[in-house]
Amino acid sequence: MDFAWTQEQQELSHSLRTIAQAISHDDQRQAQGDFWTRAQWRRCAEAGLLGLCVSQAYGGGGYDALTTALALEAFGFGCEDTGLVFSAAAHLLACTMPIVEAGSDSLKESFLPGLCAGRFVGGNAITEDDAGSDVFALHTRAVREGDEYVLDGCKSYVSNGPVADVFVVYARTNPAHGYLGISAFVVERTTPGLILGEPFTKMGLTSTPACRVSFEGCRVPASHRLGKEGQGASLFKRSMLWERACLFALYLGVMERQLERTIHYARERRQFGKPIGRNQAVAHRVADMKLRLEMSRLLLYRSCWLFGRGEPATLEIALSKLAVSSAAVQGGLDALHIHGARGIDCDYGIERMLRDAIPGTLFSGTAEMQRDIIANELGL
Ligand SMILES: Cc1cc2nc3c(=O)[nH]c(=O)nc-3n(C[C@H](O)[C@H](O)[C@H](O)COP(=O)(O)OP(=O)(O)OC[C@H]3O[C@@H](n4cnc5c(N)ncnc54)[C@H](O)[C@@H]3O)c2cc1C
Image (tube, rainbow, N blue to C red; front, side):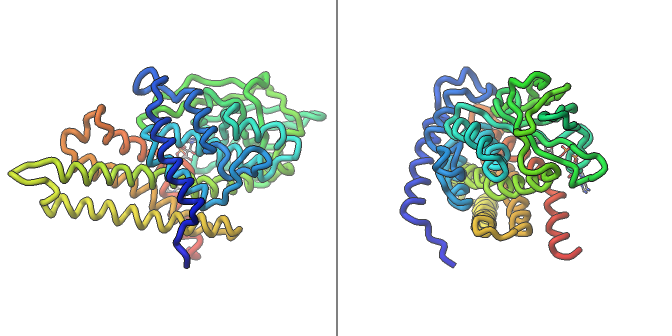
């Protein structure tokens, strides 16, 4: 196996780290706890983040899954605002990519250039109050009337929802057909009958705005359906493969930044007349952080490499998602512990990495769902 990055990939990663650092310090943010700004979003677009794996014909970067992951890792490393990177990655992988892979030419032309250029913010809406892990139990209906579908129902926890211009929405077109009775639609925020809820307050990824999105007699042109009627569930599964494989690369970047800061601190902080890192108990904790990061990295790169080659990679992607999301939480706890009281100081940036990591064990399928997939792939 060849583990070497090309010159072009190395340059991309290096430049994105630098750009991400600048974006994260954008002085237009009013205060900690606010959502990211449109100015930051446009700068993500200028850096190419919003269209990494979209064809260059639509303004994207035309990169494969592995290079997309490398770019997201670089952004995760450089940008201290993980919520912004998460928003951009969700926009790309769960809203833009379904349009790339299943949209008609006209849908692609209408939406992809704006999504890549940052004129639009994208969201994806599938989860409902009674359909979380059991996602295909969704109740939202889409009833065909002539050249339109009429959507009724309510989606919860839609990331980017409060500011999104374009949603990929999953609804039931045929209740009798279960998994095969779900279809996907591109719905614009301005469509009458689409109602946005108030933004949630979250413990982590706080700069990512999220809300409920309701549909009340919301008429969507039939031409806005993605793929054929009944293909929605398989399109969603595909978008989750993109997300589980590539999005979690941003946490590799976070873990690397966390490790750098922790090593620096363990060398600088002195107690009992010596650096705390000279204590084996501290040093071993750092060694374990490094081990989990590198194991996660290899699993993730392998998943993206296989996925990019068109292989199913279901097992590999579930293993990688589970490993990265768990390692990010454990790394967050370790870093916090080694920083002592500074670890919980909200101005110091260490506790934030832990808060941002915890949701990663929930979205894109919880840790239990990944273990179910792995067990299923192993024939259990
Ligand atoms: C930060 C964040 C962003 C999100 N963004 C979006 C978005 O943009 N769009 C969207 O549609 N949704 C989004 N979601 C929702 C997300 O997809 C769901 O939270 C997730 O699928 C889990 O569903 P739930 O929260 O209802 O938990 P539940 O499914 O109710 O699960 C609760 C607990 O029970 C466990 N559990 C459930 N069933 C089983 C089982 N069979 N075996 C073992 N354990 C089980 C789960 O693993 C979990 O620990 C987001 C969530 C988060 C946290």
